[in-house]
Length: 314
Image (cartoon, rainbow, N blue to C red; front, side, top):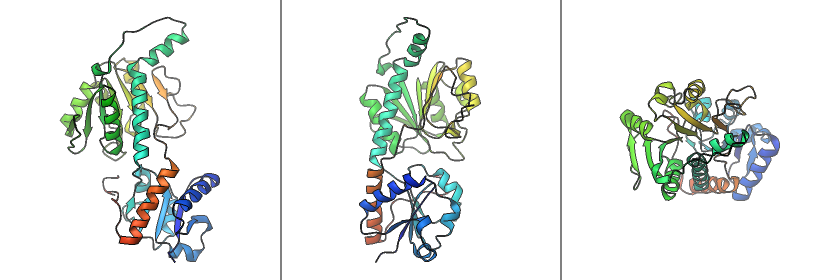
């Protein structure tokens, strides 16, 4: 009889129960127990934890776990809270998440390419103000981050006719799309992009990377989409760049504090579109299927999927 798997989350009870049910349906041969319902002996026996932003104190009580499987693609909070001595962590790599994120990138790129913010403002002023059409081929979209999400987004944007360029920390090749790396490559993407899309993980290197110095390097009137993590963008610098006309608009789906406080200046800024972190929702059914496949493979072979680079943070 396999030893129990611990489900450790900071979800509300109802949401956690739904996830437990979905995971159990995907892994009927396993015994999955929420941390709070495990006995002391079961916590000691557990070999693996399935987690979603768990309390580090709870994870610390699972003395014999061999690895951790995250239900989320983003693991920077998990890595930071569990510390450098943590057991191997596997993050969720779900093609469905990549598809949904690419869909969102394309949708909000069209929003900016077709001047929707300007038409919203014109409507508020009861102004009939048609604008010249910009063909996608004349719009350069720069992608920061060429992991699974960035690759999927690049394919969708290219198929829609946009001129797509991409940047990643290390050199990558991506079909017919121009890819760059390093500081000089980063500067090139900033200067060339009409719309800059951020899909980077949050690390010590990326925290605050989109700031006043970087905004000044961008094409005057360029726009930004941040679907990565809020702290990558320095909010005060972004507002200053928008107010100065250096940037035309920002679509923000992620923030340093979520939910975004009602007192935040971002809500009311006329050149900012605020979204409630909806660009890349996790599908619990596909996620559970991927977690189940990884756990079954581990049971059968002892092999782990690709694990997180703790030093890099992702």
